[in-house]
Length: 228
Image (cartoon, rainbow, N blue to C red; front, side, top):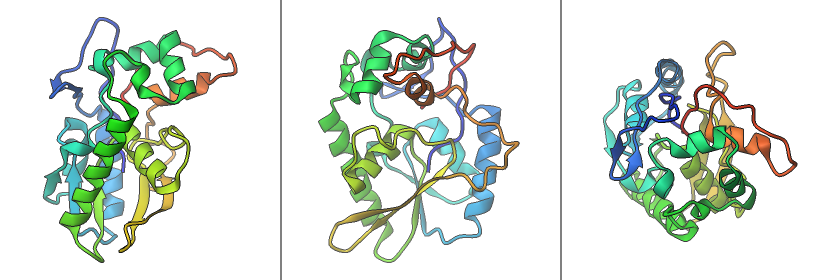
């Protein structure tokens, strides 16, 4: 599942970083979302919990109250020179290269960003670590990131690279791993636990970029933007 909505960024600011990755904390609405998804998960079987080590996943997981294992391989895609909030700002201002990243479905158009191949292999390794740690016939919850969830779904379905990168904060995506190594995407972006009045991540960089698309529409710049 994706973490709760994270703190906003404004031009001229930067997020703290962890091993080069932007590391904002949850926004107040993200804390509220975490409580809602925790309430739902308490009624379901959860045998193991995992976080990526970035604050927004750790804080989302805390609401569930279970010990969580860190899997740094499942941290968000590394955006090179556009880390620490720069990607959000560029998408929010309809930066030409930022929109090309979305329309061409390649993170590595960003200077210094992780290659698509490296990201795919890293996510694959992280998922294998989760499977090995959890064990057969058991259910794990992984508190992760929009790009990572999108890549995991791509690997399960053989879709285009960015087919699943737009997923909501604290939405649940269910993947099943079979004994032969095959993955099945059982459900995607389940938000039934997020009541209509629950604040959504309207400033999501991924959502804004996709909304501009390749049809020439323009983004209306927002005063704040939020992390993928």
